Image (cartoon, rainbow, N blue to C red; front, side, top):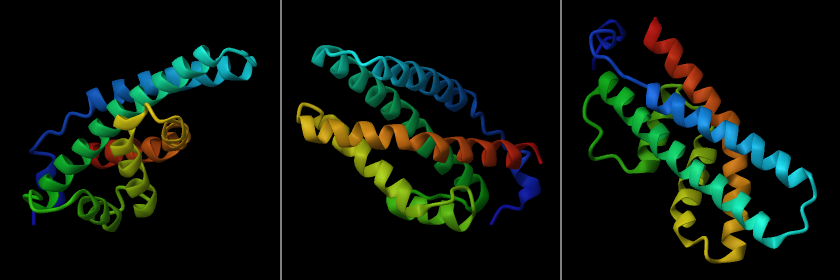
Length: 148
C-alpha cells in the first residue's frame, strides 16, 4: 500500500473532471430552468432530456476514471476490480458516501445508450439530475485529499 505522503509525489489531475462538472452543472441548471417555463413542446423536452443525459454520461465517465486513478495511487493496480468493486473500495476509503447510489449511476450510464426508449430515457434523466450532489461530494473529497 502507498502511504498518503507518497500520493503527493504522484500527481492526479482532476481539472478535466472539474471542467466537465461545470459544464454538466451549467447545462443542468439551464435545462431545469427551461423545463420550469412549462414549454408545451415534446421536441423541447427531448432536447433538454438528451442534453442532460449526454452531460451526465461524460462527467460520470471522468468521475469513475478519476476514482480509479486515485485508488491506484493509494493501493496499487485495480485492474481486476469490477466497477462495483471499485465503488465498494471507494466507499471503504470514504471517497464516496453511498455505494448503492454509485452503482445506480453506473447502471443508468449503461442504460443511457438505449435512450430511444422513452421510459428508459426518463429514468436516466431523473438519475442524471440526482447525480449532482454525489459528484460534488466526490470532487470535494478528491480536492481535499490531493492538497493535503
